[in-house]
Length: 254
Image (cartoon, rainbow, N blue to C red; front, side):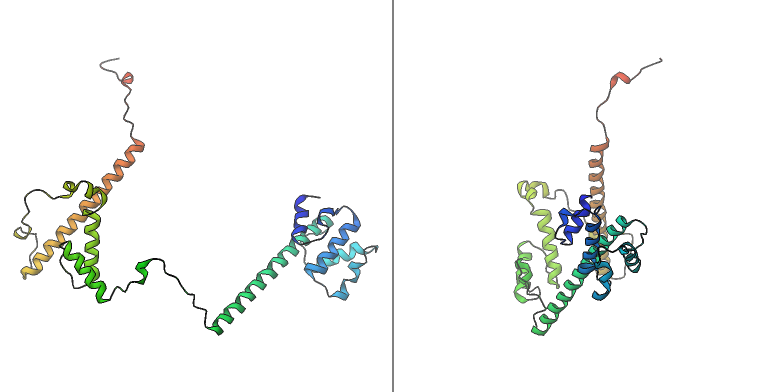
């Protein structure tokens, strides 16, 4: 008898799982009867009497009928039929446990609803979760930081906060603080407001705003190109071979 066979009986809490020898007729019949009595319960108690008569000459016929009533797909081989019965019992046990757990969960949920405790009590560990982003205190704090960073004040305080965040990431990161000169823009200021943008609006204010948007778009494209170049350089580190074997070179005719 295989160890898997015994382990499956052990999983079903069969008492003498380690002593079972299904090649023994009585052991075989006891296991089949136990499965019906304790796990499968296909028949009513009074209808199980033919299976209980372990010494009957007609027991195998009774067992065959029992397997047929269970719609066992295996016929003829009693050992395979018994193995199928064990698997079927495990499936029923698992399904029963799952149903009990679901029923228990439903009872708990119903009880919590009655007690008014269904909504979980969350404990916030992140201090930002407790902030009121629309409070006057929060808005004043943002505008104070923006003033220190010399960032223009926007009517929407969250837009101002985003601008502060971008400036801090670009100009006040660790690398910039170690080498501030690397982030200082040098050169002559470009007179962007005095150039012709290639389009024309009736209102000068709208035209100036369009010029600024065009410059921001160009800056985004420039940043994208920089990132693409970084990816190319990184990939070349895996694909390029800087070594050259000059012995393979040929000069002139061969």
